[in-house]
Image (cartoon, rainbow, N blue to C red):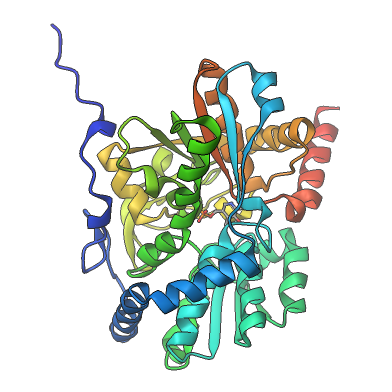
Length: 416
Ligand SMILES: *Cc1c(COP(=O)(O)O)cnc(C)c1O
């Protein structure tokens, strides 16, 4: 019996501007699951943001800093050697790795720091995983003369020692968090705790499209520039829109920043790539859609890696920036709708892509980014040479070289 084929979900009509709603929901996801004491500050922040967003003077100041301080626009670069080596689709990279401080994170850190200044808040706090958000925040705080405290898991401080030093050079205080797994989740908890007690003069710059409303919306909006530039650039360079777009997904900010502009283009396939770690077994990965369930974590309803009784699962990834149990609520929403697809790359596949891109194109990507590159290689091989794939190069790999070397050399020793 022939079953009617379900319409491919990507053909569904999308109204991207309709989300989140006024209470921060993306369909059933998102929201504000926070203690009472935070409701007023979050509402004030939402109001201040929505007002700033409509103020041309704010937009102008932000554009000036994005251009002069961060280095926008970033180029869209045709990877001719990688394309040729794979023999498939034409590969373009959006070069967020060329931004000041080395990753896309600066887009959001800048936006929120200017918003804090506008709100009269002199003290900034932030969490960081890989250290990229911490360094972006520390640098813009130095530039704007704001006090800066960064919370970072002790394990991440070990993996990203150079970024800790960079933050301190920029005048930030880095506070190590020794609780739990000593990674990003615990750093977010500490930052939240700080914010609750000092909210009157402190703004919390959350680093990904995560957490309670209005953060997922605000962070997404500050990264929309990635996709907006990409549309113009791919039309100039390839003469048409891409067939597929790919980005790695930790909390989901670089991915939604690239994808948002194209959500309403039904013919473009959008693929987020999560961290497959050592494989999809309990505690060995951070691929929320591969092993998670719907739940609430850190103020937000979304897909979360959790045990049967709702305890947050241990996670693992070779890249600190993807090593997190929850995914941003907007991703959960578009996954459910079938508009964005999610794949994962393992540590080993990411490390392979890290080396391939370095060798073939002379670009050393961040380990987070390498997950997107790994899947781009898979997709390009599967597509014919008339197809076009765009991958977001979310950050550069300088920060990861020591850790990659350690892991790669230990793999060689193991197999010797
Ligand atoms: C932080 C980070 C990520 C993951 O965060 P998203 O919010 O999912 O983008 C990816 N790549 C780099 C280079 C990062 O620094």
